Image (tube, rainbow, N blue to C red):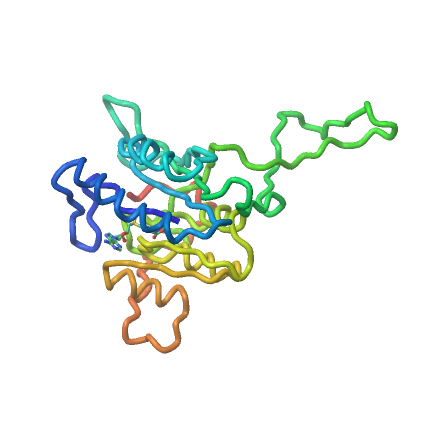
Length: 250
Ligand SMILES: C[S@@+](CC[C@H](N)C(=O)[O-])C[C@H]1O[C@@H](n2cnc3c(N)ncnc32)[C@H](O)[C@@H]1O
């Protein structure tokens, strides 16, 4: 799972991400992408998230080295500050790529979603000898809707670009099996590792900021590391029953 800083001026624990130029940022990305490709197992998959403006360059770079199987759009609800003179940003792109398109793991049955037909009643297939209800489940398409991690959600941590557990869950279930190893070299609050642990996968998370490593130690319940744990954020409000209805606090 590759979720690098996006080079859009985000502040991570008081430090603003900054590269001299777009070219320098992309060259930095190409270096760690090469390492990740080298380390990826033959049945492994890569999911890369990046800013919309950088993804086309990374896509062109990667397609020479791996097989890109899906270009996914993670669509989310609008954020607090609404665009006034342009179209607001409501998605992040995700590339799904594999090293070997004949051997990669893809657990279809573990990620099925309800196929929305628009019909109120279930559709029946009358062509069969015994009419049967149409299969109402399908593999998700390449537009995914998951709420962004908001202040009042139980999983919220103090991090400017924490990814939702539900999104990581779909990816990890689809592309790994129990006991497999999942790598997140830009672990942030260690969401990938926390979800991997819940799903009985092993994981390695790499993170440059010790405050976020402390969050990871807490989320992963490391027993011998209490001195390094970052305390859970204090939430002033009670948890909302319906996360999608809460007012946007960002
Ligand atoms: C987009 S965030 C990752 C979000 C994370 N996947 C999550 O869900 O919480 C990028 C993270 O990369 C970290 N980072 C930046 N440069 C790094 C480096 N050279 N090595 C490791 N981590 C780095 C930042 O501190 C930040 O937490």
